[in-house]
Amino acid sequence: MQKVFGSAAEALDGLLFDGMTIASGGFGLCGIPELLIAAIRDAGTRDLTFASNNAGVDGFGLGVLLESRQVKKMMSSYVGENAEFMRQYLSGELELEFNPQGTLAERMRAGGAGIAGFYTKTGVGTQIAEGKEHKEFNGETYILEEGIFADLSIVKAWKADTTGNAIFRKTARNFNPPAAKCGKVCVLEVEEIVEPGTLDPDAIHLPGIYVHRLIQGEHEKRIEQRTTRAA
Image (tube, rainbow, N blue to C red; front, side, top):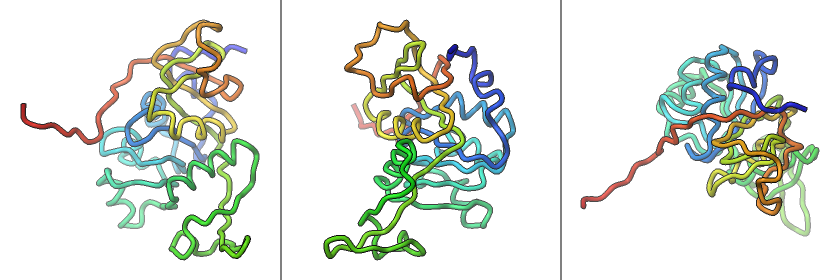
C-alpha cells in the first residue's frame, strides 16, 4: 500500500466533505498538523466539527479555519488564545463542547479502541455533567462520556518511515497518538520520512497500521507564548 503523497492537498484528495468530523492532533501550537490545516482551508470544506485540544490562535493553526468560517463546532479543552474563537462563540456563530483535558484524550483513545463510552468522575457536579448519564460505582458518582469516532484524523509527527510508523517529539506526543487512532482515515505529516528499518522499533509511538496517508514538509513551528527576559 503506497502511503506517501507529494503534498497535503494530494493526501486529502477524496477524503473531505462538508459536515464531517475531524480529530486534530497537537498541544497548543506544539505538534499541530499545520500543513493539513492549510490544505483544508484551501479546499473550502465547510460545517466542520473539530475534536482538538485547542482552537489554535488568531491566524495560525485551527485559527485559520475559524477565520474562514469553515468550522461549525469545536470539541476542545482549552480555547483561551483565540480572539476570533471568542467572538464567534459569544455571538452564537460557533458551537462549543467543552471537555476536561484528560477526558478529551480518553474519548479519542476510546474511539480508537472501538469503545463506545466510559465512566469517569471528572466533571461530576459541574456543567460538564449536565445531561449526561450518572452512575454509582463503590459509592462514588461517575458520568458517562462517549468515545470520539472521527471521519478523519490529521496529525503531525517528527519522523516516520514509509509505512507510517511514527515518532513524536516531547509535548507533541500528548494528543497526536489518540487523535490519530480515532479517525476512520488518518493522514500524517512529518518533518522527515525514512526507509523501513531505520527507526528503532522500541521508539515507535504510533504504529503504521493506523496511518493511511503520509506527507513530508517544512513547518513553521510558531511559539504560542514567547517569554523573554532582559540580557
